[in-house]
Image (tube, rainbow, N blue to C red; front, side, top):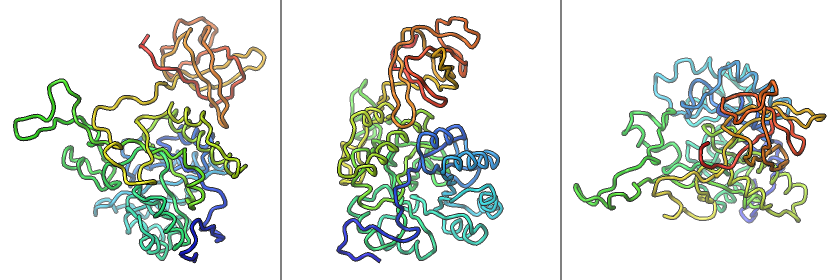
Length: 422
């Protein structure tokens, strides 16, 4: 065990200090899993049909899990499954068979909060690692030590943990630490809010959170007098989103082993863009720690995928009033996901792009690929798959031919700047 005097311990254990931080990405469906891995995730976390906290995500069948595991393995990546509900009695029927099936299809780990799910997995599916979910709100080293003593190799810290607290945890406990470094923040302790239960009878601790904190509310001084004038913005109480791209060296030096991105409900464009940026930053730091610099284009890319204003959460200090959103949200990113490259002909410079959003000739678009590949161009003309000229790409998933200024590759993204609807 490290001594209390160490500030940034480097553990030599076989399991409990990774050589390079893992980049862990969300995947709400199989397509998002493939893009997350393709754009640089070392691991992805998904939800199955049961026991997860994102019941509104597409979630995965066992067949899709198996395909996802096989795809990830080709990149040397792993797949984790969230089983992080707090279970009621009726939830436990079928738990053992479900965990055994996860082990059978090749899932590397589950993310669990309820002690009965932890214990059952250790007993009936010993090849499954069990990672403690952030739903346990673990934010001190003695609690981390408790879970290590229970046989867990990794703890996902509560989002409320600061840099100082992470350093103290790593000084006292030789264990893998996973921390959220990007994405939405809960206005309560993660998963402990019951607004959703009271307002909609949807249990946030069983996957039903309806994000009541992001609703618009009337605010009253007393039973009759409103706190604002008619026409003013209604009150909301959601938090700004977390973004730690400015603090990669600090996260690495303090000993965070897995950098977790929130967002199983987020778009393919969000997942690919955010993973792409953090992958570049991590690689750049380890290629040259002394010469590492934050690149402005990384920040610009993050902002193009942002859903809300961004801050640093609890890492530097406790958030204040300025870190919450008290009026209706505006879309932070001025860009829309427009398409995915399916193929590219080097002889003709023609790319076939699958339409994911309306676009048309004359618009400026951006093409983005893994590793920071990027260029802009104005669309001079577009055609359908038979070469017939089009005045717009209107139909979802339509294959569109575009002549590109530079070569592109399958799974590159195309996006457009938002403007008036055509």
